[in-house]
Length: 88
Image (cartoon, rainbow, N blue to C red; front, side):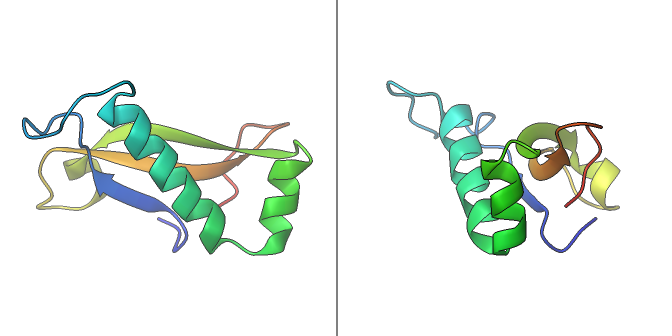
């Protein structure tokens, strides 16, 4: 796991999440992508702006991340547009 990766407990499984014009899932993805974009240096922001890299969000089981974690987690990372490989 990279220091700049972000994992957060999935909100769409929380029964107290309010649903509105935008789903809690979409709001959480947007929020985490914004946090990641703010954390990386200008080099990675330029790659994203130039279309050489992109951010992607996906769900993982907590047990796949670390022993003892329960439930589903949202992961956001930065990927190379040409190869699809995670670069950060």
